[in-house]
Length: 308
Image (tube, rainbow, N blue to C red; front, side, top):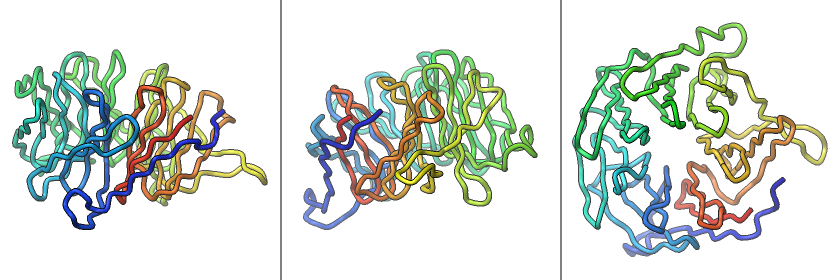
């Protein structure tokens, strides 16, 4: 289904911009104004050309780490510890928060931001940057780990196996996966959630350290998707841990980014999974180039353009 890597442009930054040897852990990347914006730790926004060349950087205040990023209202918006970070027309902006903004997603003209705080998880709903229209303390036990949105619904998942769903960003329904599927599936700690063309996918880890993926058409009834693949000597199970999941609309498949530099492809065909190894460590995020290739980022300042 997918050819070997034919083009890899791996940029392993060695602090060339500052003259020091510093490794960055890129946690998220997104297209923005014709380039790619990569964020992570330590706090900095790096801009890459579509060909994978580092073009410029924007320094953030010391100690600020951005773990998720999106484009909303013409601005680059990121979640950080204690703030929402915005960048537009060369200017940085900060909106202080009581807690850690862990995930965000545009949904039906609004911006949804999940904040993990000492009082629990709060969902903030903005209409335009800086205009907070609703704030809700969610009835969950875990920490919010990810958000995603389809055309009709917004979904969130937590570290305690809870799934949240909303049709308007204001009212949320909560499903306790571990309680609902007790005896059928092992208790889960959800890591990421992603909306595809016809379904929603969740990846997570089991309490004994294994990995699992579940699919649902409407975000209510969930079915497991086996993370197996064919190798030279038979069938194997994915051993690396998924760190995020991204929907690839061009191939109508999910891509799991994993530890040990593994990209795991999950198409509609239940027996057509594929494992691909990249010379990297943890992989956290990917975006699509204008040609439909993958721009992948991860730990140790890893950034690579990978052709199909």
